[in-house]
Image (cartoon, rainbow, N blue to C red; front, side, top):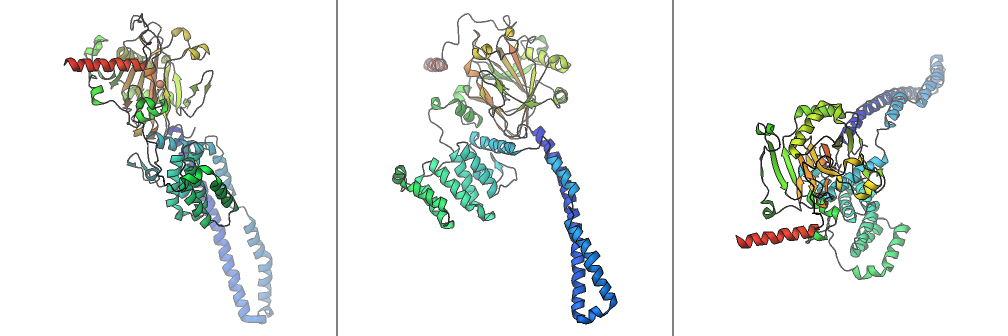
Length: 528
Ligand SMILES: O=C(O)CCC(=O)C(=O)O
Ligand SMILES: [Fe+2]
């Protein structure tokens, strides 16, 4: 897909260079045709002026008779043939061919691109006012959107139940309408819709009046306005002015958040650990798991103790990343998500991925030896290496890496005998200019992708149940491209590494655990 990877976009961008060349040729060909015609036109006009000057005497000259006949037969035929000719046919044909390539974005991909933009706006709480000026999360990208662009985005926002965003985009479109005044009625009609959805009835009324003022002849608008006025709910709201915020306010009580909201507020940095919650977390050198680490200790940064989440710095080399980039070339394909009984392409996960077995390259085995040191887990039966690339707007909504019972039951797990995914190691193979972090909403942690670093976490409770607190997601990319490597480690052969707990430590709910932690905290404080 066009919008799921910068990689593909670069390719299509290359095609546009060729399209430009064909267009240049087309214009040049037509230019010489027009130049020729213009020259003939001038010649013919000149001849006629001269003839008129001479009057009928002109036709007395046999030479002039000859010239006129020649003009009316041969010369005019030439002109006529040239006017008929499909000049620029060749470059036009070549242009069409290029545009028909399967990799050329189509209407659905244009929608995908707008969808990505709206997701960025929604997740990071960006303002249309800034976006339209090319400012993305405070960074000026030097691109301006015009009135038509703003209307396009607004229309999709409205369709996808984002009336607040649509409203903001329509105000931008309105501000720029001098660029294209014929858009005005369209903008106002959409604004009516957005305001109606937001129950801003006074706004709807004002907008209808504005619309009827500039478009008094429209029966449709007049009819709609009448119908609107007949509605009871409307009447009460007609005198109440309402300010419409571009983003819904953040609920005071975090327990009121649904999972997606929690994920997006973690991505945007609105939900994060307080200094007090953070103070037990340490960073330092780790040497325990292998004697080799005494020479080259791992740089570990604790992000959560329970469940365990650690960020290791500088655990993959550029030379290894170079090999990986070679290995993955031409193998990336749009990622799927697993529903209850099938895998499918979804807007919840817009990235390109590929799986590569460690037997394919020595480097992958070297990486796994390092992962064994980082995790103290056995890597013999880990899944194949999964590489992923996210383009602009690319993201992966909140999810758990561990498989549910249903996923197992529906036969969607490979090598079930290896058990569940006990742990994940997520390597960052690139930096990301803006956005693209990994958010853990329950843990209130947001990991900025840092090239050469890797996050490690336990997915399962010690007794083997999936740990819901490990829910996480890849935040949308604002600018740049993100490359990651997933190592998913299974339960099989780990019993000596991470012994299974004999009581079910998952039975306590998250709320109970938090409550317990809070009580301990207050106890500690009381005793200190
Ligand atoms: O790319 C990321 O930051 C997270 C990816 C992820 O969670 C996954 O692929 O399962
Ligand atoms: Fe994941």
